Structure formats: C-alpha cells, structure tokens
Length: 374
Image (cartoon, rainbow, N blue to C red; front, side, top):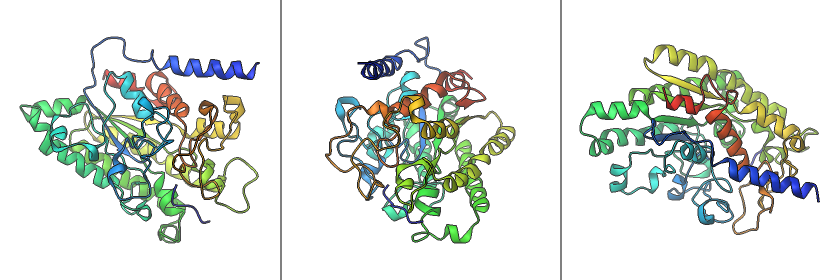
C-alpha cells in the first residue's frame, strides 16, 4: 500500500446540536476556584500539537486558513483542526490557560511559564525516525529532552528549591498522545521506511510499547507523577487511508490497518499496570478512544454525523492530504467526523475531552477531574 505523507427537522436538530455543543463547554470545570493542578505538560503528535511545527521546516504545518476557523478570533495557530484540541478543553475545565508551544516561547517566556508547556509535534512518533519524511519533527525523545531543559534550566527561575519543583511537578498532569505516525508515517510507508520489512506486526507493536514505556519512565525520573496516556484511534478509518488504497474497501474502514492498531493498543494496559506498580507515587490514566471512534465511523448517522467521514475542508491528493490553503470549509462542521484527511473536527475532540474529564468509560481507572484531586 502506498500512502500520502501528508497527511424544518434536520435543521432544528443541527441547531440544537450546535447549541448543546457550545453551551456544554461552559459547565464541566472544577467546582471551586481552587486549582489543584498547577500545570499540564503535553507530549505527542498532531492531535495535540498547539503550534510547535510552525517553527520547523516541515510539510506537516498548518499555520494557515481554514485551520483554526473556530478557534479564538479564527486564528490559525498551528492546531491540526478547525478549533480546539482535546487538551485545550481539558485545561480550560481545569482552570488553566491554553498550553503554549515550546518552540514559540522566548527564553524569558520559558523561564516564566509555570502553567504548562506543549512539546507535541505534528507527524512525530514514538520512534525517532517516524515522520521524518515530512521534514523536521520533534520525536518523543526530543520532546522529553526539551522538557529536561525546562526542569533543569527554566523552572528553577520560578521556584526557590528543588523540593518546590518536585512538589509542583507531582501535582501537574502529563498528557501523552502519540503513536499514530509510527504507522501512518512509518510502518505503512515501505517506500520511505524499512520497519514493515524488518518487523512483523506483533514485533513492531511490542517495539513501540517498549519504547513508549522507557519514555514514560524518563518523564517519571524528571518529576512526573500524574499521567494521561491515550491509546490510538482507528487509523484504518481515516479518509487518507481509505482514499489511498485501490480498490477502496467496501466498508467504511480498512480493517487490516485497524488490526495493526489493535495490536499496539492491546499492549498499553499491561504496560500501565507494570509502571503503576513499579514507579512509586505514580498514577496512570488510560484514554480509551478506539472503540467509540470506530463505532462513529461505522455508523456516523447514529451519532449525528451526517457528513460521515468526508473531510470538512478541501483536501488534495485525491482525498489524502491536510487542508488546502485558503479554501472555504464545510459550513456545518459539527456534522463531520473529520476536519481534513487525518484529523477530527473540534466536536470529536470535545466529546473525547468531556468523557475523559468527568466520565467513567473514556478515561480510567479515574477520570481527569478525579486525577486532579489525587
């Protein structure tokens, strides 16, 4: 397979859906003004990147319209969606400001920022080579190295003692959402990477889990104690994947690709269990997003997505790329699952975030609101 690197009743229903979506974001936050979480630190790929790739030489860059059309003032900040990411919603409900991209901060701002920093990079993966065919990226290892600089060089400017830094970090939440590009921009591109020729699907999944585990341990050794780790969504349902194969599958998703993802996802719970038992004082929350997303892709109308899995914005490459610049997107963005050929619309991000913040089925064994109070 060859895949692109780049990645009168119904109207009333839409109005009601839009109203509920916009109003619901106001009432999920912590009840008091007390903020038990001082900061949120973010590591991952384009699903949570808040603009780091704007400062890199890469094709995986979205600092142009129509990206951000539903963000503050319609600004194209570098987020790979029409509006807000999952992390944006979570920090809002935690009473924190939006998490700035590390690469966009001046040296003074790095020293002064104590509410969290985003190190995520579009097209990045767990493995250092993943996504490099698109240009410069911040691999997970590089992201953690930048966090090391934050801990060693910047936080001491805002705290008097190492004990204060340790206490602050132990109360902060560390979000990790990565791994998609180890498939999209690595294993599924045999013309650019050798991984599919070197590893069986089971071996590759085990390699990713082992590597992710070591990176989480590195974060723990730097002071992280509260982790939110997301599994991967059904990549085999992405428009970019579906539109890249010939002939196209007769079902909404390419199940051979989803099987690869299931192999990886199946290794996360045992990894988290092992880390929880061996890393003293740690709490790991597992973000379960595959099943619901898969159901939405298989039966979009059931979940109110009349636009199905057709990208909302205008994409190129026969439906396999990110949005083309300055093209008008669809009007009813809440009725589409996908913003471009790779990334979900804001509504999907909101549903994941709300389920994770106060629900019991998306994130467990505790939700983010409960994690904040541990």
